Length: 591
Image (cartoon, rainbow, N blue to C red; front, side, top):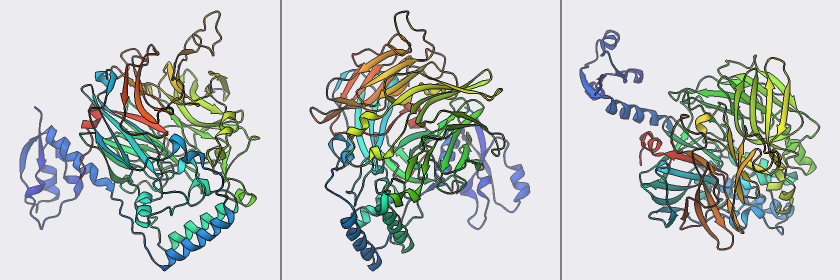
C-alpha cells in the first residue's frame, strides 16, 4: 500500500498557529514547512492514502455554508401581511383553480422516510446499484395569490437500489426559503406566478419591504432547489437557477439530508444555472448564471479539485432567460434567445417574461477556458426558444448542437388554469450547426413528436454521440432517436426506422417523467446504447406511482422492472442517477 507522510495536526501545540494550506498530505515530508515555521513543534508519522483521502474530504465539506436564517416576527411583519391580504383580496381573482396545484401536480403533504423492500415485478440489474432521484416543486404552503409550476419548494424523491432490492424516500431540500416560511407558518416569498400586472408590482414591493424591515433574511438567497440535480467532487447538488446550489447528502439507507449552501469559498456571488455540465473526461464542471442586472450572464469553470475559477462576464444586450447551455471539448455554447425579462411589462398587465418573435436567436461560442468574452463568436438562426439541450460536439470546422427547439414560448402557460393551452406547444428535436471557419449557421428538424427533457449516455457529454432519449410532452412515452440512422426506403426520416429508433409507450392513464440513461458498463468502450432507462410513472386511474426500468437498446414494450411505490410522486422536473461508487465517494458531513 502506498504510504504518505503528513503533518500531524493533533501534535501542534495549542499556542502555535499554522495556515490551513500546510495541513496537507505530502509525499516528501515537511522539510520546507520546518524552514518556514521553525518554531512549530512538529513530527512526522506515516498514514495510508485511504486515510489521507478521508481527511481531505472532511476538509472539503468545511466549505458548506450552514443555512441559519433569522427572520423576525414583529409589528412590521404583521402590518405588511395585513396590507398584502387586503391588496390580494382586491386585485386577485381566486375563482379560477390553479391547474398546477391539482391532480398529480398537487403537493404531497408529508415527507416519506426510507421505506424498504418494495414490491418488484421483474428484476433490477446490478448496474442500477445506486440511487435514482427526481426533484420537483412541492409547495409546503398554499400561495397567497398566483402560482407557477416552477414556484414550489423543492422535494427530492429517491429510490435506493442495492443487490436487487429497492427503498423509497422523499425529502424537502431544506432551503432558507422553506425554513423561514415554516417559521411563519405560511407563504412569505414572492412567486413567479405573482409576477404579472399591477399585482405583480405590488408583490415585488412587498418582498422588498419584508427584506428591508428584516422580516425576511435574504442573506442565504431565496431559491427553492426544485429544478435539477448534479454531482461533482463528492457533492450531490440541488439546483434552481435563481440561487446557489444546496448540498444534499445521501445516507446509506437512501435517506437524504440537506447540509447547506455551496458558495465555493465565497467565490460564487451570482445565481447558478440548474443545468451545469460535467465533462466526464476531465472531471471539470462548467456553469453560468443569468441576472436582471449587468453582467447579464456570467460564465464559470470549476476545476477537477472543486475550485471555482474567476468569473467571465458574457456581454449580451439585454436580460434574458437562459435556462441551459452546452459544452464541447473546447467550447462553451450560450443561447441569447429573445425571452426577455421586462419588469415594466407588468404595468401593462403582462407577465415579467416576454418573448419577442421578431428577434433572431443568437448562439455564442466561447473557448471554454477563456478569461474574458473577447473571443466569443455569435451566430444567428431563426427565432425560437430552447429550454433543454441534449449534447454538443465538434465535427471538422463545425460545432454541432442537439437541442429541443420551441416556437413561441409562453411562460404564462404554466400559470393558473392553463391545461387546455398546453395543447398548442410545439417543441421538437433539432440539429444546429455553427461553422467556426465561415461563420455560417444551419439547422434541421429531427422529430415530429412534441418532445423535451432530452437525455444521452452522459459518458459522451461534449463529445459526438449517436442516441438521444426524449420524453413526450404529454408524458405518455419515451422516444429513442438515432442521429446516424439512414431511413428505410419506405420510411420518412422522422418515423420509426428512420431517425426514430424506438418508442416506449405507456398505457392509458399512465404518465411518466424524465428518463435517465444508466449504462451497463462505465465509460465509452461498449455500445453507446447498452444500458437502461429509469423513470417515475404515475397512474391517474389508481392514484398510485411506480418506477419503471426499460431496456434502452431494444426499447422493448415489456419493462425490465416495475417497482411499486408506497406514496404518490407528483409530476416533477428533472431526474438524476448516482452510482454506488459515487455514493461511496461523497464528502463527509455532520448528520
